[in-house]
Image 1 (tube, rainbow, N blue to C red):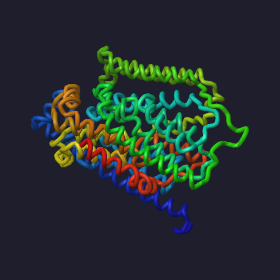
Image 2: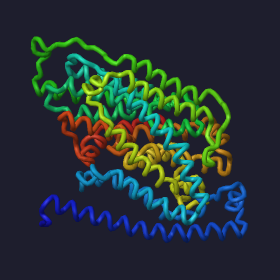
Image 3: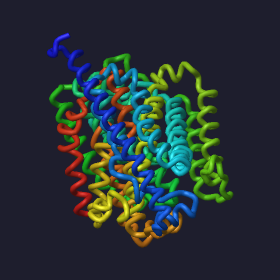
Length: 505
């Protein structure tokens, strides 16, 4: 097949990517094994930091891991960014295998080099971070998928703006995933008579799938991960002023843009006779179940029932109880919601399965990055720790990486960077308590940067994937990866971020 054909180009691109993967894998394996030997030598030589960590039971790997060990993480995120563009069919059918490849590329040499210590680190991030993260997303996605808004909703600029406002408010309490899945279909159905709908979905991603989730750990995945690491549940209300600035400017932009297109298209002010069906909300039992999800998360932050060790990973008993409750509530929603209602809501499991497969690869491959950054000035990324000093640095560096990578692991990365910078070698619980009080402005910068910049690209936050997929299925064309950034993020989102920086940081 000729080079000029699209299929031929995609095959060549796939072969090139696979070749790079293999080369990176070989280099990583060699370097990781060498680092493992160095760690053993350092420990035997009584190097204080490493020897002390060995005495505690787990080596301080962050001080000996090379930057090469972060390459699978970069490769995983670049695959998410570019594979859907250069090989969409291959990606659609094999994204789970690609995620497993990158996870294995890190995991196998990591386990060979560091054995029990590596096993502990992998189990810890899976049991303490990934499992509760995906359980919360699954429960919110499942419950919200059982709520259906029927009837005629006329998509005028005022109605659309109100929908975005309501969605932004709901996002902090039912999650950006839940709010986005609940409202994206009503928004598209209300505007099915409109010619220009793409910008509506983009602003929906800005406000409902990202910025609106800034107020609670329920709202956005990075804040939930912070909550798992000791940030108080209601602490995130401290970034309410930041969120209001972002939301207000974006809503003004949106209303002006929607009004322009509405006038240009010459839309009739009311629907044709006989088509005006009263609005009706079905699946109301799921609203009660959703309240149970909120209470379950609140419970895990209020009570202290001690810890339990599973496979050497210590987690609070109330956290395990919360996870079990979330699974039970999601299962209850499936049991009590009529199948026909979910079918009418175009509910499918593909979006959450895609997120689950991709994020397990992300969480595993980001282990070296987190360990290196947590080592602070003693790790291979010391130049990042020493270079990120002021709150505005944390806001923009966390944000830019959140926009081009993924905001959940990026939040954790710079959360640990701040802990390593201000409170090196201090136990996490004590360090987090100090960070949220005496150095709160830095955590505000990290949290707001991760949440706000998550809207910068499709890969910035998990719901962005889902919204784009649903919109295209319902006939709304969406911009490409770079089209989204150039036409919308740079034009509308970045000015808002600049204003927040000038006012708050």
